[in-house]
Image (cartoon, one colour):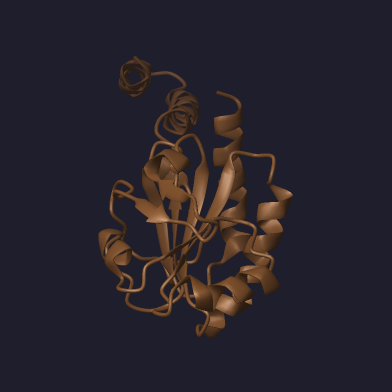
Length: 199
């Protein structure tokens, strides 16, 4: 209905010989409004620098992994939440740099439908990351992917860190290789959360 209305507005601009410029301007304003009221995915993260952005798969892959706390992480844990999935390792310098920002935002948004998910690629398993997680107070789920199998299902993780944004329906909205520019992503993450909270 909205798309038809938008098309109709554009076509009717050519039926007015008088005041054509004003009519065209009016149509442009309406068309911009129509564009914003439709699918917003194309507008998400438009202010994020292109450097570091990577292609993503469309949907969250199958997940059923043991967590550091002994529970299991499955796709059900992503439903109705905005999730930032961060592939990292204890030996990765840039990972160590960005983790405090993740910890701070997780605390800031702890009462919102938002979560970071840490995916460690350390080969030694939970024993090597446990003291690290405790020291950095990483109060968000941690799973292991020592052979990179989950990384492959996300489209390939060939260097660290790599981070993906997943919406509440399981759509993978963005991917980033290297330091995650959280400052640039945060406004649209907040917008996505607001949409979820108002449903």
